[in-house]
Image (tube, rainbow, N blue to C red; front, side, top):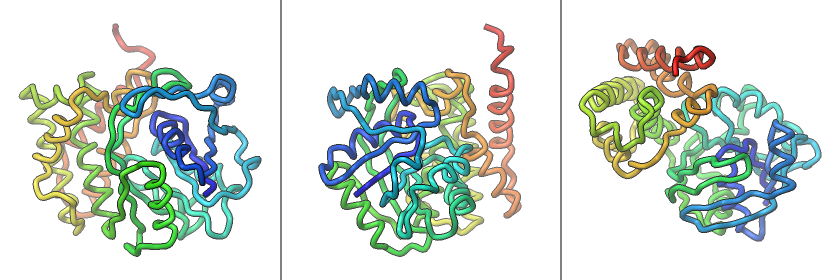
Length: 310
């Protein structure tokens, strides 16, 4: 299978590393930064962590058109960049090419379809973790399950093909017929963890060690769960607060992706995470004051990087 991965952040590079272990697949990386792409091309990609130490030379380009048609595109850009990234990969799309999003937040499937047409996009989540150490170096922080699904709920041939490739590459992968429930279940975990770590600059596990963050986290999660119930979403777990606290424990030493963005003074995915809860809440008339507050605070962080007091 010919696979193009759009995005060279921690997870895009991790999947390029892992999927390259399948000898039957040809993996391409797509970057929008020529300097970073050149560094990866010339020096290679270095991986350390739970999957061992590796040095590989992935195929990488800033010009998608030179790749030719592929069987699968995996979008692993930040959620605010989904539409532009999907338009950028349009030269790679043949009649049967699917575009898989494993990104955080809500709205990515809709953004992809707006960019390249209906029926192209399908989605999923992954529990694997990775951190960027340098433009061409990552740490594989943890293994986890990757679950994919179709918007229709059908187990399609393209989903089966992706599961087969993931399995040959050694990934733990499965299919769900409840994609909305899967995405909301991951969203609620991000709602409870990401913004609070970005604001407090502490590791995931510390959130449940302090009464202040634990209280705010529980309230944000409860609001999101109420919105999901009002929308008729069937979550993958019964006790959202307990689930999020469990994830805090199991990923205690992790630096959440939103905190990584803030430490690098980059745009975050707050609009697609807590902001998505706020937007959907308006549709169903559920109050979400805690998520609105977190949304406002992280947006202010982004807007004031240049004049922060140190």
